[in-house]
Image 1 (tube, one colour):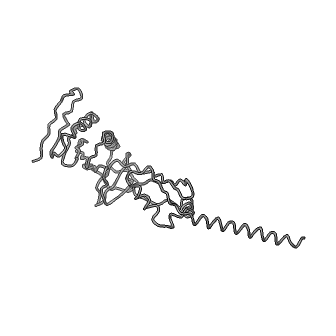
Image 2 (cartoon, rainbow, N blue to C red; image 1 turned 90 degrees about the vertical axis):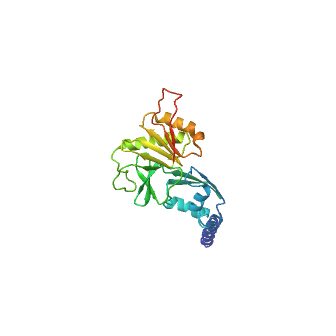
Length: 242
């Protein structure tokens, strides 16, 4: 009787090893076939999937899970981080947390993108649609992940305020030009919009939004620097480009 105990132990260990191998085999054989992406605006779903799951190995459920838990996440431009939520053996949701970007400046043949606090969050060699190019600012040497050296936080406050108002009305501008007095001109295709002082920006952008249908197809300069919130029937000058 005593001689059979070791054999039973060996059988038990062997069975455990076989079960473990079967589990490992099952895990490595499961492929991720359903991927959903949320929180993404800069990238399409297809682009995010191609970046995170470029081959069959990366779509292996076991490999994907271990990489997500044990390794640093992939560095993706304009993405702060992402989270993988496993909703089943072959189903994953990718939750994207994008960097907050309000504008960019041109610097040494690159485009430096900054957030609402003026921190340079990304450097790229191309202009991204939907983000205004900010010109007219005077700054020193730019360092990635540090504040754009313009000397005053008020500059970023004005840029953030203006870009937020434009976003509320769904207006996209190609460029925002600031002069030495901190006044902004907007460039939208062939239309230049002179805003003048930073007073009553919400009212000025509201007027601009109402006039967009009339400006479609035109080329020239619209003067909203004479905006008066007390005069609801005011007319604003438009000078066609010669």
